[in-house]
Length: 68
Image (cartoon, rainbow, N blue to C red):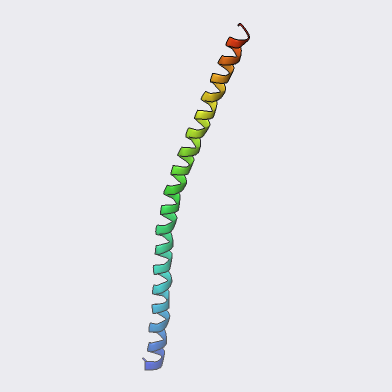
């Protein structure tokens, strides 16, 4: 094969290798972000549960204060 064409092919595949490495690094970052989102969703759900418990307690207090 022509040495110039061979060099161009090697350069082309080297650039592709770099692109694939960047994509794999992005996959790792996306996995980390997904895990963090899972933790955020769990924390949000816990906050909702706490707010519901607070509402229940407030309703119980109102009922007690109203003499029922």
